[in-house]
Picture (cartoon, rainbow, N blue to C red):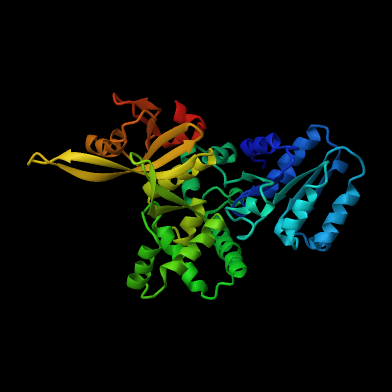
Length: 417
């Protein structure tokens, strides 16, 4: 089964021979290696690049252990370069090389070397990984499969694909597991023995139970405003454990750096400033979130909100949580001030969209509830409500567009309908 990931492939192609290290980042098992070793390799061959000019090394392969030595790696690459034509150097799991930052910077001195790397641990996959290369790296961020990518290879109806996707997520290898039990076990093993073990080992965490509990609490609270202080109180009242907000903030940083979760910060729309704490946290892959809770909390409205958030980020938007003030008249002639929430502010360049994720607006009261924050904004940027119902895009008299989740996810230009 070949999954076309054209958006990422096109990003790599657009950065070809730009003089920078191409750094492919993303949560483990999201398809980074496949992108480089299969899709990008095939592109180079079809372009007419000789196999001898493609230098590929999988550093997690035991047979390449000698190349984990930085001097051996540099020698190996230089010995493979025998003419002035471009050589494509593709290294998978580059963090296995000692002093890998030095090695990559050394590659930049080879004029006809075009370098692409991936890495899969919490140190390498830090949000500031590009600074490791002193401004000479160019990041290509890879996510688990979007619903659009998932349905392109998933058998069955769109509704059946949705049932699988919102339960088990979009890590590519989930498609090779046929039964619910196999899918759940794959996710459970991956979370515990790969993701968390890597973080514990990398950061030398002594009390793994604390990290486990934090992951479970964050899993239960996707889309809810929280902060380390609030989480510390939860540990005290529910778990009867005392953990400082500083420690919890550090753990959240580890989870974020490993791309397991993502933080959406609140933004005052009218005041045009970030509010800061509290914030919302969403899971990079909803299947990983669900398996942490043994699929006990699979409320479709919360999961849908997480999926909408991920889709906006896959499309390249910076995504924040919006806050807007709303005034309502009182019987005494005065006005009461309310702070309303806009689920997402999606911004990219000069584009901006306000997006509400609403499971249903089947009655007028629910519709007014979802529309009120959008109507309170007062600017001309597009306002969208995504609903679970399978409906095409439609606008009301105020210009607010309502669109069904399938049409939103399956059309990558759906925000501009």
